[in-house]
Image (cartoon, rainbow, N blue to C red; front, side, top):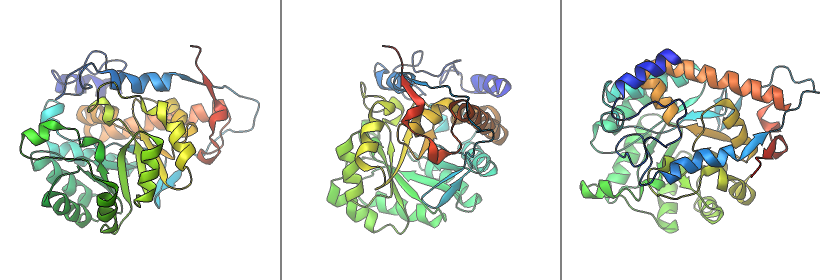
Length: 339
């Protein structure tokens, strides 16, 4: 991974420092780029909210080879991890590799290691065009996310997403505050519950709503027919001073666990972080910036190397906390950090 990270640092110069700890401190306000919006507080909150929990070490047990496999929405996962939908290489990552090479490498690496990669959306058209082509190239084993566009663009892109053969689609409703898109003549906006229900009812595959940060919004997602939610503050890139995902995940899980698939992202950097999020109520997690760094630094090999690292870390954390499988993970393995 060190070789991959060094290559990424060279490729992403001026857009991402590839810091030893990706915590949003050095890159605060660097949007475009890989930083958090404004003061960067929401980005930093993701890391801080996870750091607020320690793991209880337990070794008097017989767990030697934990089972890391799970499934979401009928799709098997070798580990409870998906690559989050991040696109726009030329805008956010330095442009040293093409959008096509980036997203194809990310999805291919995910497929090779038995997990799912998600694709992003944006302006200009080559972002979603590359994304949809990459999903077709892996026979539909990817999740296309589209933004909450206004007018006909939303339904046009939904049709294109479905045409890739994807078994699941998603919408990052947390992109509704991206005023830069409106300034570029491509407005996005929130959707009322009735509007969202109509969109989901027209979609013949499971639909994910990304950007849920309160229990009442999670219940609304259930009510409008979403198959899954992603507890996410959009990597701290849309609303300064939003809480971290791990801060709100437990109350959301308390409200809707068992009614809807719960995914979560935000500040997940290692296998122990994955285990924490599962313990807090997630069924699986999405990881963003680290996957982008691995892809830019090593293309498909970078992705598979990073997934291997995450899996090994997760296995170790499960052994050291006495978790035989993902279904058995609960809040008993967590201890609040000393305040």
